[in-house]
Image: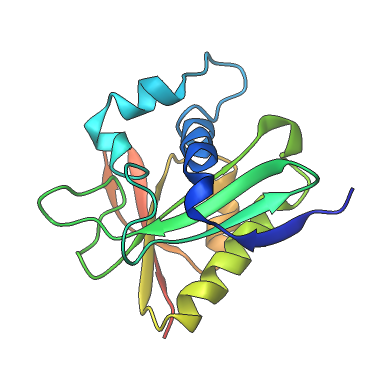
Length: 161
């Protein structure tokens, strides 16, 4: 079945939380976590708590069922994320269900979210990725460049202007 993309809606909050779990526990050979594990950790929960907040943007990929999501959220300097650059730069998060990885879902989600960010006149996007995560290459191909590190993860920035 072909992959369809659509804007994320308030009803996608639960799935977006599941995709944060997929992003956090991305290594297929290591134990996974649960939505509760993520929501119990404030440094992770702020990426999805209360979805959607004003300024949030997101995209969901489906092939008859949701298989991935990418979203942006502005975080304040008082509660920064791992990819925090400044309060005017939203942080991008993305997850794809394990059985759908390697099929171009992440590439399509990222391209659609970047296009949406441009339509909303955003100037920059940031994210955090572990150096050995395969998604790093996707982010680099999309124009993200490393601007720092936090706890061993790379902080990357994309200039949209």
